[in-house]
Length: 153
Length: 243
Image 1 (cartoon, chains in turn red, yellow):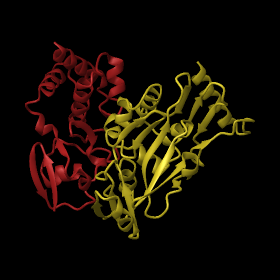
Image 2 (tube, helix red, strand yellow):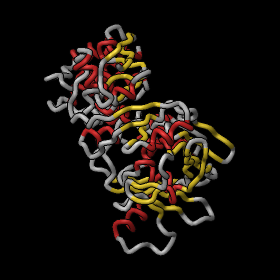
Image 3 (spheres, one colour):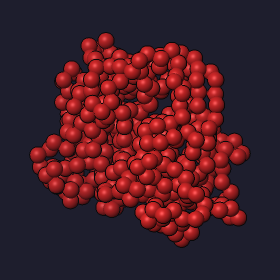
Image 4 (cartoon, helix red, strand yellow):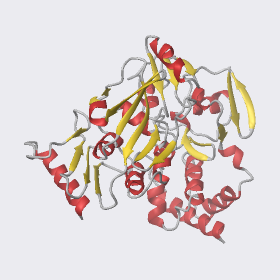
């Protein structure tokens, strides 16, 4: 039995050590905001927060995540930065199929909170590890800058 | 893409490690950012993972007048955000910031990168140039090896059975020292196709390290090697360091 703390709630999960955190979140706990894309760390669809910082849930054996404070997109409903990002993504048409969006939002939130979203070049560099196969990057980069401006006011 | 089944242990006691690692197929795990893809692709099928992250001192960053001590569990992101005194601080941040992506850097560790010794990784080359020393620990016994002796070959280190990399010590360079870092990669965050690092301390010959399929290694001071690829890397590293 694995003990995981997710979005402030303790869970006891009958998972095997080899299951990734992404697998446990989606298939054991039904928390499906976290997407599983490449399963090797390249695409960023599976980002979650561990102790407040984004990590790849596909590259984290759930057994290693025991004792960590895990936050998924579901846990950020009332987060001010996420509210600004949601609004900006809508205004800038920053998603098409939406598969990359959860990971994109978590990476973007981290960029903004670390003060790395001042201009388009910085946002592009900061999102280099987030793949959008619809190639809608222009809208995403504009949305992240828009959210950063909203939050700095 | 699911790893083969393995058992999992975590210990907060250094003295328990050798026995845990004595089990056939048991290997230590730090951030798992290289290991997990290798396991998912079934390139690695360990019987047991032994987590190092609860060990005392594993994430320590300590500064003494001549030395920066980094616990093996210090992450790339920690180095990216700044550890130790300048000029070392800026140099380490530059190397760390080019490794994979921030979510990977938040988890991946300097010690893990060195202990795996993937020839395409960044820390082996950069820390070789920076004269780093590996602190190896077997239970409670410690020994120190210069990185050039620790890094034996690709995916091979001088670690003995039951022994783990506990920390890295980087000598503090003089204020007027220069550092060059050159990584050739097909895209941002990708593994290096080639990399080179150079430390230049005034009055001393430049210390140049390069990656090659044989692993990260120091270049001889002179003459330049016959390999034109390595010679070019050395040249670029020198030019960047002195620019």
